[in-house]
Amino acid sequence: MTEREWVQFHRPENLAKSIAIEAGELLECYQWRGDADRERVADELADVLTYALLLADRLDLDPERIVLDKLERTRAKYPVEKARGRSAKYDQL
Image 1 (cartoon, rainbow, N blue to C red):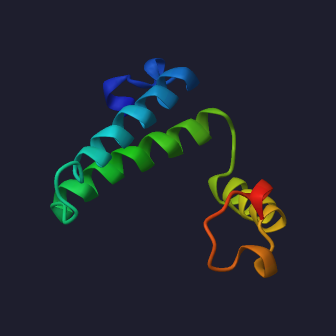
Image 2 (cartoon, rainbow, N blue to C red; image 1 turned 120 degrees about the vertical axis):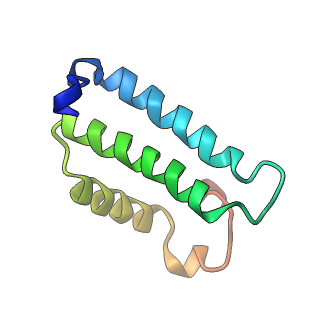
C-alpha cells in the first residue's frame, strides 16, 4: 500500500464505506445460491477483513482487544441461562 501511496485515501469514513461495499460483494456470493464459490468468498472476505484492519489501525484500536471487549458486553446482554438456543434480542429475553 505504501508503494502505491493509497494511505492518503484511508480516512475512517472511506474505510467504513469500503467495508460496507466489500461486505455487499461478499453477500452477493450467496445471492442466488447457498453454496457460493469458496475462492470468491475468500477473496471478498479478505477485502472486508483488510479494510476492517486498516480502519482499526487508522483509529488506533487493537482489533483483538475490541473483539474481546465486545464479546464481554455481549455475554452480559445475553446470559447463557436466558439466551441458550434462542435468537431473541436481549430486550426480549
